[in-house]
Length: 450
Image (cartoon, rainbow, N blue to C red; front, side):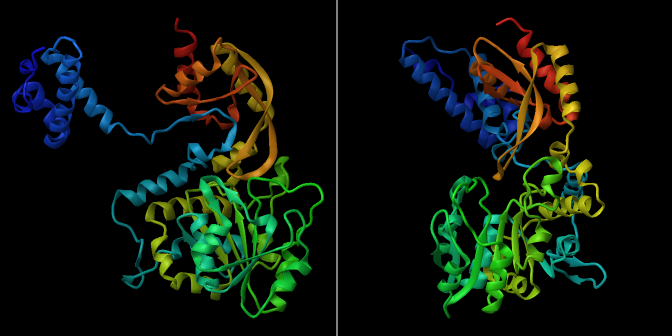
């Protein structure tokens, strides 16, 4: 064992190979990498292995540096058939939205500048005009996600006061977002009424006191309440709230501007429907059924929106220029009546099963496998237990889990699902422009001997 044969960090820096790494990665990072590989080499020598040659050390240092700087947020091909896949970034953006982000990111912008007046402007105006035109609301504002929207609304409208909610709506969704916890953080006092499966309008009315600030209705999101159940309708809750001069907040969670029933799914209340039913404020996500960037959107009465804008929390959760650019472009698709053809989420939802079958057969002709009928899901906490008919490419390898692991290591990674010992690939969620690289990846794995 001769640890003295190893070069010092200084010697590695003076070597031409070390200097090249310093030029590429910077001195500080290169020094850290050299120290790391030398430490590993010492451990290896102490374990009885021969000392590595200089080429091995510099190769290890380069690999270490590449690993440290390799991005972990990378594009993937979603072949799972889950349209709004929370773990895979939810809604893919339209081409217009992506271009809008590039324009906003390329240089300076009018984020908070009024060109006509030549003075400071307000960032909320960029989406507000579009949102009010689309929904019919008096006012609108955007924050960084729907959880933040609900927190802001409760903080601004009900701090140290009571908020009444049916017990069946005390939900928890992905990431540990719990309505009771959010209410506690906002400073509002939770008043739950009714039972787990049945809440009547009279339960809500009997709970109203002079300390009540707000009625809250929350979308069930990722579960369904079935069987012996009762919940007050939004319109009835709104009438009750208004008869007591109280506002009602409707947390839609996902939120949609299109009628989901038109596409063979259960009907989700649209945002304009909720406002027409009497909701004073409606909150919803930008990156789910809307098909835009991550955002929380609040629409409703101008006086209530104004109170939220003035709250100190509003600044902490405000959207950035990239979010507003992409959101405005996405809303433009709805205003022009082209969401079904331009917004990827709605292109997937409205996809013709006959066309999906044709794509699956085209895949099978190139890589083998069987084409089988299947079901796609919307995902993202939207439309639980609802699915859409599709056709999938089914591959039956000896070890399905091993194949999906190899698929995840491709560039770009392919994410599939396993059912009945088959690996399934659903064309509904593979963007058409991804077909070539998708098939190249499958050929690489399926046609290469193990």
